[in-house]
Amino acid sequence: MVRLVGSIDKGVLYVVATPIGNLGDISARSIAVLQQVDLIAAEDTRHTKPLLHHMGIATPLFAMHEHNEQAQLDGLIERLGAGQSIALVSDAGTPLISDPGFLLVRECHRSGIRVSPVPGACAAVAALSVSGLPPDRFRFEGFPPRTASARQQFFRGLLAEDATLLFYESSHRIVASLADMSMVFGGDRRAVLVRELTKIHETILSAQLSELSAIVERDSNQSKGEIVVLVAGARKDCDSVSAEAERVLDILRETLPLKQAVSLAARISGEKKNRLYQLALKNERQ
Ligand code: SAM
Image (cartoon, rainbow, N blue to C red; front, top):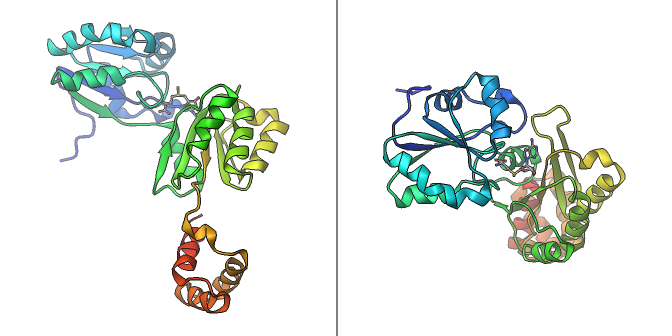
C-alpha cells in the first residue's frame, strides 16, 4: 500500500528538504513531518521561521549553524536516543548538499539512530534536469574556491573529467569564475548557467564558455540571484578524430543511419570505425 503522508516514528532524525524558491514545492509529507517532530534543527532559524509560519507549523526550533554543529551534537543525539524525533532542515533545498548536517547524520549512524530522508528540491539536481547536458554521469563540486589562483588550480584538477560538471557559485564571484572556467576548460566547452530556479527571474543560458562568460560580464542582470553552473565533460578518445573525418561523418549522418554513416565515413577518411562510432554517439548525446 502506498503511504502518502502518515505519522512519524519516534527516535528518528528526518532530513527534510525545503523549497529553493517557490514555496509551492514543499511536499505534503515535509509539512506532516515538520508538524509532528519534537524539534526542528535549522541551519538558521531566522530563515526557517517565515517558512514554518507560512505553513502554520509551531514546532520548536533549534539553531544549528555549521560552526557550532559539532558542539550541538551530543545534545541532539541524547534527545534522539531518548525517543524524541528531530527534523533537520537547511535554509533552502536539501540539507548536507553544500549545507550543514553531515556531522549529525554521521553521528546518528555511529550511535545506531535511524536517519530517514524527506526528499524534495535540490538546486544541483533541478539544474541538471533542465541543462540539456548529458545527465547520465555528473560530478557535483559545490562552490569553487574564492581566490583566483586557488580556483584556477581547482578547475585544472577537473580538466580531464568527462562527466558533466556542476558548480554552485555566488553572484559576487560568477563573472570571475566563468572567466577562469573559460580559460582553463577552453572557451569552446559548452556550459549552462542556471539562475533563480523556480523564482520569477528563472533563467537558463546555454552557450560555449567564452560566450557565456561575455554575456554575464556584459549584462549585470545575469549575475544576480542564486546560480548553478554546469560545464560539459571533457571529450574522450574520439577527440583525436580529425576535423575532416568529423565533417564527413556529420554530412553522412544527415541522411544515413548511424552504422552506415560511420562505416562510410571510415572508408572515406581512413579513420578508425570505432573512434567515429564513439564520436557519433557523443555528438548525439550533446
Ligand atoms: N542545499 C541546497 C540545495 O539542495 O540545493 C544548496 C545550498 S547552497 C548553500 C546555496 C547555493 O545553491 C546557491 O548559492 C546557488 O548556487 C544554489 N541555489 C540555491 N537555490 C537556487 C535556485 N533557486 N536557483 C539556482 N541555484 C540555486
